[in-house]
Image: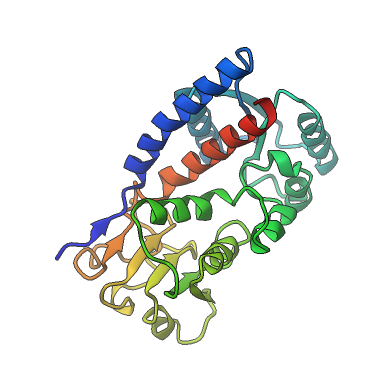
Length: 281
C-alpha cells in the first residue's frame, strides 16, 4: 500500500484561507489595523533575498502588512542590535524576522536574543526555546512547529512513539526534539557523528531528517511503517533522506519539495497573525 503523503503545500494553502479571515476580523475590531511582520535582511545573499520575498508574498496573501528592512553586508553587531531595538519599540510591528545567515562579523545569537519575546514569531530566541521546553507559552521555532502542525493535521499519533531526530541545530533539531517530547514521544537525538546511526534510525516510529546533508539518511535504514519527515532541501530537489525508495515502505512521508518547506513559512505567518491578535484585539 502506498504511503500517505503529508502535503505541506496543501495544508499551508488551506491555512492561508483561515488566516485571511482572521486578519479581516482583526481589521474590523481594530479600526483597520493589520498585523505587520518586519523582515531584516543583512547583506546581499540571493537565497536569503528569495526567502524574504517569499515571506513578504505570504503576508500579502493573508492581508497582513510587511516591513522590509535591508542592511548592508558591512553592518556591525551594534548596528543590527540598534535596528532590532527600534523594531521592538515600534507598536505597529507585531513580528520580527532576522533572516539567517547574517554576515560573519555579526554575533547572530546576540541579535536573535535581542528580539522581544512577544515579537519572536520565528521562535529563535533562547528565552522562547526555554519557555517552549518547559511547556510555557512561546512561539515555536518555525520549521519544527510547522512539522508539528503538519503531523496534527494528518492525525499522526505521537504519544508513546519512538521519535528519532537526526540533526541538532538550534533552530531545527533541538527544538524539534523538545516539541516531540512535549507530545509524549520517546525521543532520540542523533547527528552526523553518532555511532551506528543506521541501527538507531531503524528504531524510529517517527523519523525526522534535519542533518543538512543531501540523502544522508538511507532508505534501507528506515523500518517498515515509519512516519518519515524530511526537513532538508538541496539542489536537484532532494532532501536529507532517500525518499524515492520509501514511498511504499513508510506509512507516511513529507515530499521534497512541498512537504516541510511550505509549513515553515506558513507557521511564521500564523504566529505573526497570533501576535497581532494579542496586540490589537
